[in-house]
Length: 329
Image (cartoon, rainbow, N blue to C red):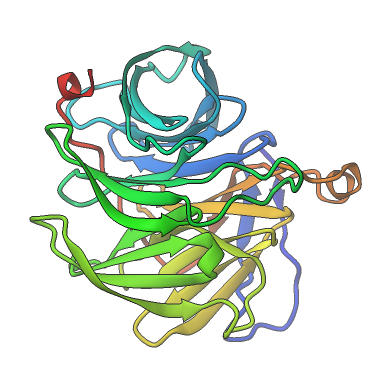
């Protein structure tokens, strides 16, 4: 795909000029980027189109497949030691699909309901360093207010290897970004309508979290947009996508400092993940969901997957889910 240049202006501690490339066609609602080191590819979804996507940077090959399932399709994560097998979010449930990364269709084989609250659906998901799945949910979209969702109806869950589902947090509005500190002592989490990033003390062995506190407040820091997907770099800094905006931010969670802002030619920034052979490429998913025709004409690349070069940071491989597939029956 083409490359595009961000706005040029005088560098400052809170703005970074770097190379931004378009590496996919525009999607409606790109989400959930996951770097798989085994295939050296990035996987992500187009939520309401029920599409899974794969981008292989070495060959610049982009492929996509449609899942014959319920709307929406919210995440895709490889399953440990199961080639071409992925865990996906399907409405209020998780499912298992098999996809070779080339064909244009993939079928799901198992389903396990996670959130039984009427109208709720799953949203963002990740595996922690042990392979335990963390997946959050959210309430339905308001029929008379597109783009706005009922608050405090969702939850945050874990799914163990044996399929045991445990609710970790309740009264969540839009469960979004998750990341763990490099030493696995802290769990970072975003409930979008809190307009903040929170930190919890974390026990990797048990999956327990406690002592939640705000470590970065969007409104206090005058950051525009809604906090969405999130990743962490090897220095322990968080990179946060800002929905309903054109930028991502880099923050130091220890000092609550805004370190960097990177702007994109897109209206809705949804999530971020490091990838590439050296894990120094930052991949950014975006959306064109609920944008007007005028907005689309001004920024036609909304919905594109972007690759950012020269961030001077490196991240971590995506962690596959460790789960007994029979437990999902």
